[in-house]
Length: 264
Length: 288
Picture 1 (cartoon, helix red, strand yellow):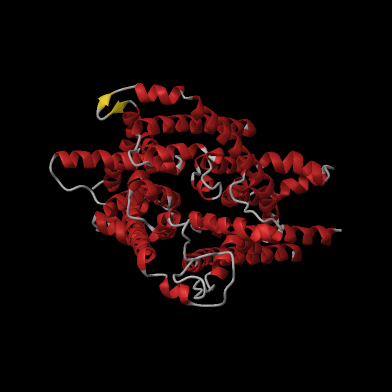
Picture 2 (cartoon, chains in turn brown, green):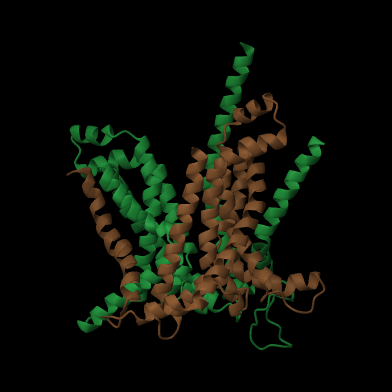
């Protein structure tokens, strides 16, 4: 028996449950109860509300990504300069929350924003249902995903390059700007992709922290509603998902370009 | 000056860790809160705003009712799906590794879909797939696929790629000759696999299994779209307004930390050994 054959069960599985399901998005976008019907598809594409929400979500997601990068880069940088054995332990502490149930952590923030922070700031109201609260929890949820790739890149950086830069007369700021930062671009790029795209679709945060107020909806929310309403709107939801997939594809193309330019 | 920047660094790390752990600690502290207040409420009323007194009652009631069922379902799905995904993924990686480059790239590209797609998209594709299959089954007068099987298929599918991508690098490191040599020495293909190839790539398989297990335990989005019977995260989401027993946080958090620390401490120990070795070499160099 050839070794190839060990992969056959998986290949069957992959076609049935990974490849074929993707085709359903395109199938359901242009059919209604089994017949070709483009009416919902066009209506969804033409509806300006959807496009505005996509734009708003991209802006919100960019804010999240930017703050995560600003907070996360120093973390990764400090960790990468520590002794390996100490850094190994502390970095694990930073990644543990990644694996702690997303919904449960968001639920905890709900309580903190409603009870703890208002009493600290002497406010009578609650802090959920505000844009900054949604942003705060988004940053919280995705910060470890930014730190992880940055830490991986920075800790593999050849330290002798930094010494060389110092020897050639660069000061600390110059070494950082001209050597460390350019070399950490692959980490920055994969950090941004790990935060930016999931944040567009994080529909639980606007519901739990934004109190379900449509003003704070992200693009993921309209897809979620289309599918989870009592009579699911497969055609509309699929069309919205196609728009999402195209945006994801375009943004990964842009990010790849950045990555390549840096290598050249 | 140098000392000041150093302590500033530690303060920054400590602040960030505090930010990351604040909600988790909050839940763990409140899991010991006495929610039952006889003067005001007849029922247990989960309110995370006020401390009423210490109790262990929340741990006693944790596994009763809907939360208990959800926890059991989560563990069953995670256990079965991660084992199946590990077997399927390891076999796949071994097969893929010996394929020609073009076929290999094609398969790996499709396998990456669940990893690069937003999990929202993975969730709705499964929802539509099962709706389609069930509509056919109804027409044929057969039983529909139940929630348990749906969850199982979905969880296996999104965790297999993680197993494949943790096993493949190990296979690349190990020699291609091993399998052939074992066969030349009289092993059947199955024996060659089990006695020679698998032990060689065991660390990759183990980390793939841990990945599959944690992916399944942690999943909310896919399960939310696929099935109506709630796994734990879905249960938390849909009952968040009424209040969720915070003891769940402790029950999830403690085993998770233990698991991750065990996996990582081994790696850390290895790195420390390497560091010490390096120092010895440097000292020797200096001595010479």
